[in-house]
Length: 329
Image (cartoon, rainbow, N blue to C red; front, side, top):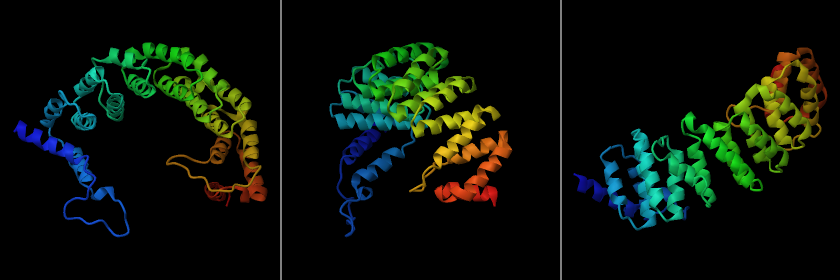
């Protein structure tokens, strides 16, 4: 039985690299390429559908002495996916052991990425993760940091110290700072505040600043309201301000109504040229502010809405306009 399963996986490995059309199919005239019609696509569907635990040792056997990089990558990728379905957490440690011995950068990067995409939990190989988090290869370093952030709380203090060291070491590397801020958002404490504030004040890249602001929010929440307000008044970027308004609205009260009113006035200086797309659960900043004023300063909210309807209705995008009309008419 084992040999039959092994032969089946070996055949799938070959098919995974076969970009030709499946037997009996013809390419539609209007298309020059359709990956769903290929042998490789059918093989991916087959191997992704595996749920039999007996295939786990088959993958492991085929990985022993495997020389072909693409085969290694596919075996590790689909081993992780199968183990994830079956809650076989020990496979995370098994894969990290492979990374320890593997020389191929591409193989290691994709192995770590695969673990990050799974729910598998690292148990015995935590020391290796700390080593990899110092790796010279940025992708290996980043994926290792992400895996570290999933470890139990008893590791958080050590992970935080590592991240704070790297915040200084990579202070000119925006990509590194973003990943470090995201990691600190999960493992950080009050010790992380100076480094995160420094990232915000020094960064000229919006995603980096927002990542650091989000980390401060995750760690300290409402206790940093004064910082959110200070940062809002000092930062000139509208996207950063929008993130901060979200937090001020979440934790503020009537004392922040003037900030909110002035923000609406600033938002509506110019007419919108395009309609913004809002992700699921998100709402326009204007709506967030009016909801805040409805709760903490209803008279001011009504006055602001009257001004918008009288003078600024054409300045709104479609989503904002529909909400304001629903609120006032």
